[in-house]
Length: 318
Image (cartoon, rainbow, N blue to C red; front, side, top):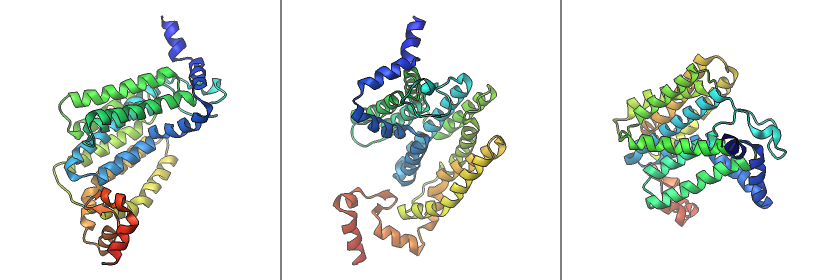
């Protein structure tokens, strides 16, 4: 039985078989769709949803970030502990030199946790519709990893299962306060580091520490920044974020700086609405707020549906 399971779930011949069932014309689509599970993509999505979502649901969106961070801690820890090689060396269609370890798939685990959490806490559409959309996205991301040859089938199956199980466990506990989940993410990463994993564990430890401290400060307050205020603050701090990323790339191996840097970056994301509120009175912010499709802090969907250009012209003519 073990040999049979390994032959199905952890053998490159399964990758070949799966890829051969996909029409060649669809392969580029899977190559693009796989980026929906990229860590950078999920971070950008989570950040934008947190910044520009309604204040009334800020805690739910912070919980999505916390669940995503926990998923990263789980995947990074397991990768560094198991250190299972990828199938890329045995597959002609796989990208050459694709680094990192294979088990479990961080893309599958992260997509399952992020999109699953979003479907669970969002209020758009019906629950069935949200779960259906999330299921399609998660399935496509997981399948794409096998199709492009960077993961075994078992990697993505375990990744999806762990991601959904983590979401279920957090929501099932009844305590959906993000602070506890941020702290749990840090504990998982610290435990993985103690067991010898060096696969993004310092990044996760730093991010969890920064998020726990920042959310503890802002969680009990209510903030009403303009959408334009958040946009201006993001543009002003972008050079600092880029510099932090460049510095972290040059201090690899010196974990105190890595932990401190990622703690600062993650904390900054969570406190942006609090700081941005102070920019509401800036003339430049007021000018942008009148001309961009914002309704307070959130994006005005009606402005998009009626045409942003028309809205701008109307405001400029006031």
